[in-house]
Length: 197
Image (cartoon, rainbow, N blue to C red; front, side, top):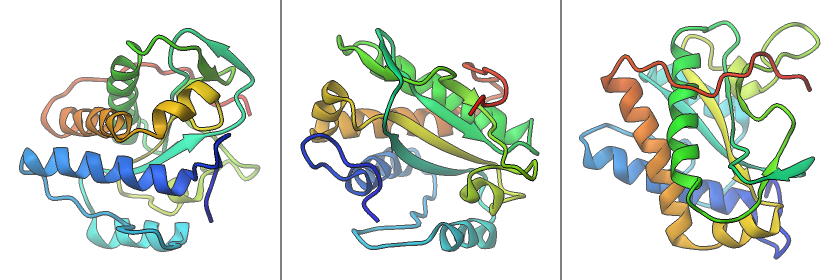
């Protein structure tokens, strides 16, 4: 499953892995023990990733993604980070800190960014009133966030995401958000209420 595919054929799965590896390297440099649910280009189901998280019971579980099909562009990053609807304290704070660090890191790029109307930090529910995203729903009990860092399908962002430098920039920002979650009481920012999708 390649996920979203950019205009030049870049596969989301490859970018996600590169960004996750960059985040892991940053966290490990600060002495944080990191486990990746996927370490190479192979398929791993959402259920198996969530099982890894629940069996290890980590302090934080972050699912890294890149978005597709924005509905408009703006002059600031359209990052979206989802938290577990039933965890208004830990998961929401983790998501807010990742959002804060990612948007600060991306903002200096002078491009138009892909956006969806309710970009920011939010919960998204399915028809049964549970978390829409299986990775969050199935990792109940573990503070978890799903981060759509930028838009792979947007031409300008896609070009940046094709570079190792930008992948490392995103990874370092995710790592800073996680570190702040682990070491501070900072609340994070970017909260926009429940998703309108």
